[in-house]
Image (cartoon, rainbow, N blue to C red; front, side, top):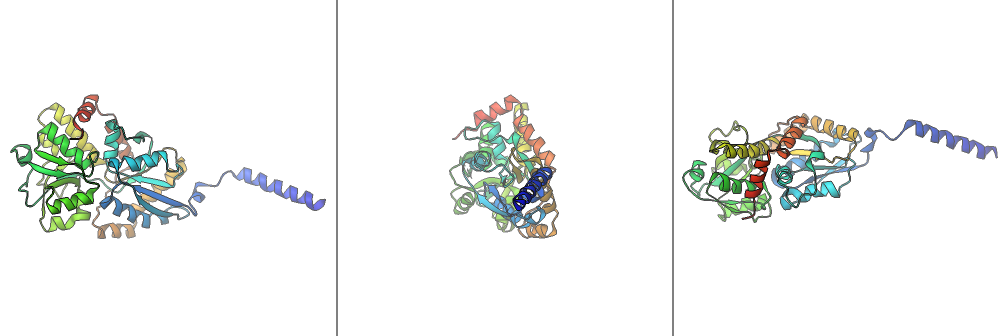
Length: 341
C-alpha cells in the first residue's frame, strides 16, 4: 500500500513538474527531424538548395537532416501549392521558387492555391537580373535588333507560366519586340538543349543561373547576352540594355518597372509557410543567415560559380507586397497580354 502510494505521489510530482516546465523548447524541436526543401526548378535553384542542405543543418539546434525534393511543373505553382496544401506547417518544409510564383498570384492565375502574402521568408541567397541570350549563329547581339529593327528571334520557354516564356510574350505584345515564343519545353535544361540543337535561337533566364549551369557558353562565346531585366544594370553586363530603356510611354514604363522589380529583387528566395510557429521561423532565419556567412558554404558556392548577395528578409516581403499591390491598370494589362499563344 505504501509502495503504491509512493508511486502515485511520484507520478503526480512528475506530472506537476512537466506542466510547470511547459512544452518542449523550439531548440529541441528539430532534433531527430528531417527538413525538406521543395525546389521547383533545376539548374541553379537545385544546385543552391543542395548546397544549403549540406551546410545549413549545423546551424540549426538539434542538427536535423535536410533533403531536397525537386517538384517541377505548372510554372512553379505545383511546388508552391504543395507547400500550402499538403506539406506540414511545422517548420519541417522550406520552399524555393523563382519570381514567377509571385507573378502568377498577382495575375490571378487559375492554378494558384497558395497565398504569398502569408508566407514567412527566411532569406534569399542573392538577387540578380534576368537576361536574354541569343545563340551565336542567330545574328542577334543587341536588343535594338529585335525591338527596333524587326529581326525575329525564336525563344524557347519552360512552360507558358514560367518567366522564360511570359517575359518575351509580354515584350512582344507590349513593346513590339520581334520574338517568336515556343513555350512547350518541360524545364530549363530542355530549353538549353533545344538552343544547342538549333530548335530555338535563345531564351530568358536568371543571370546567376546562366553562369552556374552554362558558364561554358559565355566563356566559349556561344551566346550573346543581348538585354537584361532589372531595375539597374548588373555590373558585369554594362553592354546589355535594360528593358526599361525600351518603354515608349507611361503605361509601358509602369509595366516595365513592374517586371523589372519582380525579376531583379527576389533572386533565389527561401520561405516557410504562414502556419509555422514564430520561434521556429526565427530559428530558420538565424540558421540561414549563419549559413550565408559560413566559410565552408561560401567556398562551396564559389566553386559552383554561384554569387551570394543575400538581401534583408524585410526587402523580400516589401517587394512581394509591391507586386501584389501593383496598380490595377498594370495588372489588367499584364493579364490581358500574358495568354498562351
